[in-house]
Length: 206
Image 1 (cartoon, one colour):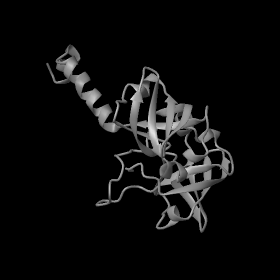
Image 2: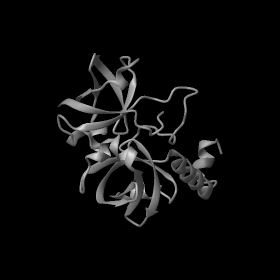
Image 3: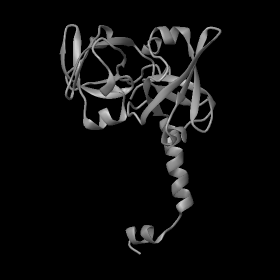
């Protein structure tokens, strides 16, 4: 489990078939083989590490759902270690299970913040509400506006300057993860609407 508060921006050293190697400093402290690291919001397993880098596996599912298959050597990536028990929850509960990708369709400045506009598929948009949470590239952000096919967030200059949003531009793909609470609520309401069915009765021996 993660919080969406990026601890470091790493640099891609290499991208091979099924393997991504990233240069880092803070993220390497206490790192162990088999441990988890969120890379652009995707929870990945550490398979190797050295004094200045670590490697993670990229499964076909990860490549299908994220933008990690499009990154290049030298690209910056957002990094976050898992939340420890008793740790500070500065953002919101982020699983690191990317729902899909969105596309940046607008960037504008407003005071000390940048307004990012993202086009996203309906299977993600359905979970978004104004003032609710969304993880973009693993960053915990608050939705400030939502329409039928895009949403906006306000990103503080500090956050932008300390994440890879600082280099993202119009038409770039970003990883998106909707708030897990919204998914649980939808699931609960769907079960409530369904009620007792013939399948339910058979499953319980009637």
